[in-house]
Amino acid sequence: MKKHKKLKTVLICAGCVLILVILASATALVALRIRTDSINDDFSGVFTDPKYSEPVSVNGIETITQDVSCGYAVIEMFGAWCGKDVTDESLYGEYGRVVTSTGGAFRDEMNRQFPGFSTEMHKYLKNTELIDTVYSSLRNGVPVPFEWAAKYGDEWTLHYSLITGMDIPGDRVTVANPYGYTEKITLQELLDRTSFRAYSGMPLFLKLGFAFGIFEKNTVFTATPDRDITDTDEKNGTDVMPADFSLFFSCCIIPDRKNILDTENGIIQKDLVLDGTASSAWVPDEETLRELYCIVRENGLASITRTMTSSSLTTDGTAIGVDPNTYYEISFVMNGERHTVIGDATAECYIQQDEEARRFMDAVREIRQIMKKLPEWSSLPEANGAYQ
Image 1 (cartoon, rainbow, N blue to C red):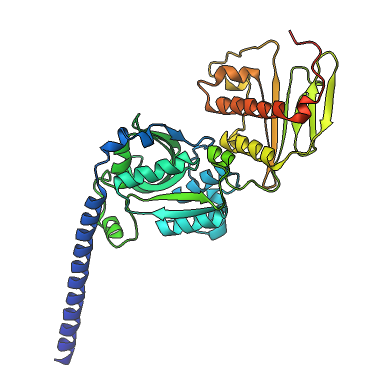
Image 2: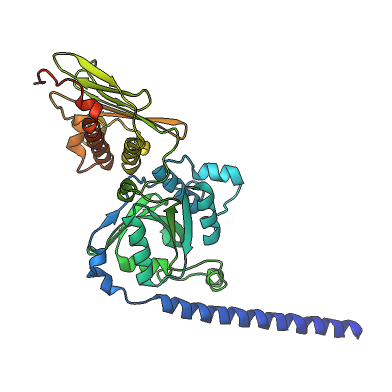
């Protein structure tokens, strides 16, 4: 009799606990619905707001395919953009597990990996607030990690990606998705997916994850440099320049007559054509070094591994020739690693269809402009003759 009474007591307690769990879950789900409805404000005014009239984007970001996790892959893309060598494999190797499964944990890892930035998490933003937050960060030259719904094959997933561009009048948002592709979507689609309205048939356990605050909706992360931003920084959105940064640049038509800018060895050299070459010692100042670093970072030179010539860039097997041809080399050191990109003037013929060719030629032009403005360059003799 006592055993039956004890069992009855246990069953009654278990039933009460179950009822409390059901009530708590139902209450949390109702609160989630109310909170979700509150963020869904009308954003139609942004299309005509002068504040958003100019498209904004961050260059030099290469979309990768995740090997371990989307959170680690976004950190890898952000790191490649700002000059830090970190990969999703190296992060997994460090921890032996994925530590970015929640938004708060992702924010903490961003702050750990990028001490030159302060990363903040903005959750349950209204639609207009989310748009403004993303636009402002991109305008300042910094890409925006965020949480949203994304399909892996035919299945919806909770996912991290990186917003790299926003053209509000054109209703286009550019996203680097670590499932291995770049998406160009409308603002409405972005918001449908950041609010997870697009996630049809979401399992109950995920709904409860949102209801109890494990996951968040309309959530983005902003990374702000931990210092005042100079004019150059505001234009290019740089992080802190690595202490060991150096750059070597050469361009020539004849190999033994190169124009050279070399920050590591402190040399400027000019091709004088018929008179050979002339050189001068040169000590680059901080501003010039930072401008060169911005060019490297903004154009994503560290991610270019191909030779930037027609033979590598052609898609139909037909190589283009240029006569006389100009040959380029950009070699730089960042965080203990040397990267070298070489190419020639034929790359200019591919800048409309090949993103890496465009970035390479933009970098070449920008470095040459800096070189020709230097007083040490102007002090060298003028070239005698010209190449035909």
